[in-house]
Structure formats: C-alpha cells, structure tokens
Length: 218
Image (cartoon, rainbow, N blue to C red):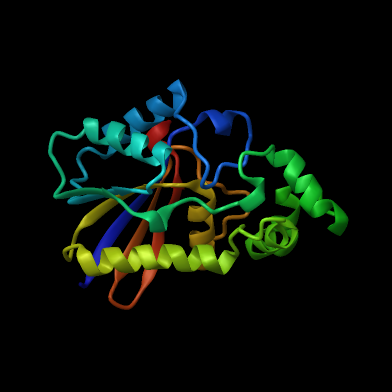
C-alpha cells in the first residue's frame, strides 16, 4: 500500500444528541434532522467513488451509512461494519445528562464543564478524570480510544487497495480524540453531525488533510 484516503463522517443527529445525553456505546435512533444530515452527505459525496464503505457497528452509524449509500449511483466493493470505529465507552455515565456529569466529575477539581477541562489540560485529562470517577471502571482512557482507532486504520491499510477512497461513518468524541492524537488542534472544534474529516494514509505517515468540514451539510 502506498496511499489511501479515509473519509470519516460523523453520524446524523440522534434523539440522545438532542437531549444532550452521554451517548457512547449506548444508542438511539436518528431524528428527522439526522436523516436529512445523512441525505446531504450522500448527495455531496456521491461522486467521490468509494470502493469501501464502513460504519461502526452501532445502529445510528449503520442507519446513517445506509441513507448515505442510497444516494450513490453505484455499489461499493465492500459495505460492512468495524467495531474499532465505535464511539468512546463512557462506562457508568452512558445515557446520563452530559452537563450534570461533567459538573460531578470536574467539580472537585475546580471545573464545571468538559470544555473547562479541555481548555486547561486537554482531552487526555478529560478521559483520565472520567475513568477515575467511573464506579463501573469501564470508561475508556485516551490511549485506549486512540489504540482502538489505530487498529481500525491498520485494518484498512492491510485490506484496502492502494489508491482507494474509503468512507467510514463514525462518532464525534472518538474522532476528535484520534485527530487530537495526530496533532490536530481540536479545542473548541467538535465534529458536527454529518461533518467530514479526511485522513490521508501512506506507508510512512497518517495525517488529517481535512477536519470537521461542515460544508457538506450547509
């Protein structure tokens, strides 16, 4: 392999997104707005010709993927799911109110929001503090998320033809973490529903050439 381009697209808006709930490995259906997000992505990307199309194995990503595919006038060589590109596992905090949770986790350290932690000490600290507070001990660390995603990228490197464009429907917090690990400044820049981020992968390098491009849904 000498080069592949991976187009990461965050799934369309979901019911739990609208309620500002922690949505990692738990799931909810796309809203009507979320379905429209997916339709717009499909219309904008239908001429890119993706040989391989994947989503994480969660329902919201699969639903988004299938709506996007419905706008293509060809059938990709491969359409499948990859567990590696799931959202972050938030452990005990799955499904709970995001604002309340970050007040609870960060309050004892002088933080009131997730953004407070990120702005002060970065994404690694966000994951560390959640892991520390999680009574289930299941919440993922920064390195666990990064390594899981890297295993997914490695799979694509090994199994997709040189020169391929690959579409992956995935999730915002995990994508942000992986982009951060590759040097993208993600402070104040969380991937929107339906946004596109492009990772260029060569034999010796991986770099995001586009991050959180919202033009596909504008």
